Image 1 (spheres, helix red, strand yellow):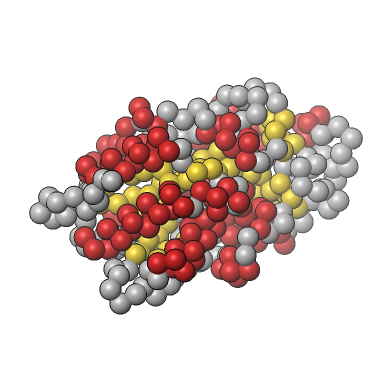
Image 2 (tube, rainbow, N blue to C red):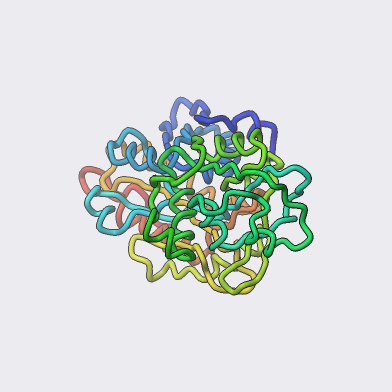
Length: 348
């Protein structure tokens, strides 16, 4: 990734570009998970068209609140809204890109991919049941590894977060204890640990805290040269966080039969599947308050689907398949309208 992205990764990250005099401003807010690719797309789109985008990376919870209040043109969330919630708030939702969430650690002498962890053990760490790095469960998963007799410093998100939603959704699926005691949501009552805001904040906190563990979107782990772990997936296979593993998990998604594109990709079967794979979603009103801004936003998203796939793959995201993009564009044409009922987007 570029120096542009590195300088932008701060706790309340936002990027902005001035639009041309004739173009409507595109404003968005929400998930930190897709921030690296949205910023890259915005930079390229600005250079190609002269039109800009202002996106505030404030977390999925904040993005949902802002689009419900109609203070932005679009919201972004890694936690999909259920169809009844979309209807209640007059919103349309679609997936924009997919990627992986990875455990990251800061243990002296440990390099990326040297350690492995499974879901049950990860849940026990976040429940506060496993407190030392040389716990027998971790030793069994990592024979031969030099694990210190040191307390584990647990790091989690402090803000409403779609990354947390997907992370805790996975823990619910693999741990009955987590399911009954904590559950899954964009914000939960954490049994233990230090809170940090955004993927950026978790990256920074793990980076400066010895013997810590956290969870971040994969692009943040790579950009910040963090030590990520391998994981043991649903099929009992050890897998590395890489494009092929994210693609394997994403391949199971049946978007055509998912009302409101509601789809969660955690703990998918497949020997090569990464267990914490997630989609990130865009939210827009069915009846837009500013037709020009909405049209400009859809033009940007259409450009990203058509021309942004290689940039997404370069940052280890998974672009949406062409057949899914076709479904999404039909949703734009059918469901996003002006106050007088005219479609904002014309299908091509």
